[in-house]
Image 1 (cartoon, rainbow, N blue to C red):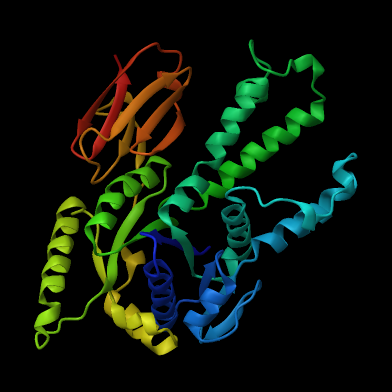
Image 2: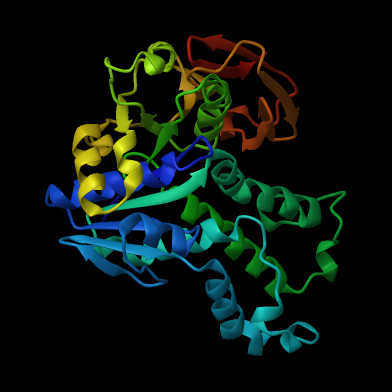
Length: 367
């Protein structure tokens, strides 16, 4: 099975360039590698210097590339099931459907699962961190909707909107199947087989955003195993006009290293922006192997031998977190992001919790 590296980070070209550089380096190092994006087909083609489509195409020895067309994936999936639907849904063609939020990421994970046995490493260009965090939250949102409609775990509950006696059995069974499939797809990114590589644009605004986005990604159970700073200005001592920018860049990198000391901080050179296989390969070699980082799950179910829910939230500013207990869910807010987290079995049916921060670790226990 393939090792999966998901590249995300500050908005800008850096994410796509870093993902392509890593894919080129990985293939050159002897790994059968797939570079997958679910963004612009034209963008990946321009970066690699050749046409890329909805099926894997070889762009260099041991390196394939794929630009997923989520609209085509949705149309195909709809047409395959359309005959089983009742009117008016059966009368809708796939091209008439709106694109649901985060569906591109879901189709990408389905394709990754289907192709993972053919590659040793799959490098995913997932775009900006906001889109990835939204996609990671889909299984929790579906579970919340299911609980509101019919109760937890697909069982009718008091106060649910749809009484169990009025629901056909196929409705609840299909809903359970959708929930299970969403969780399975997200679990493809679980450590140690999968991890996120965060591309940090070297400016103050991007650093402030990363201090919230990186903990938010880990809040969803996916490990951020490495940081890539860039694209970076090359040292240029002969041009005094660049000296202030070079000092600012160096200061920001020092701050990032201090905020996330347990993670490798790799460097992506600006020369990779020109695109083409050789510049990307050279940048990837200089950057190093992000996938070599040792990763573990950022969420745990005990602390010092006691039942607890723990989250590793590295770099999170003080005062940027909030908690609400809602039944057997803990709602955790990290800046503008939040997640409904199911409590471990040993913490369910309690009325109050207490939370403490132990370094980068948030520990939630019985009060």
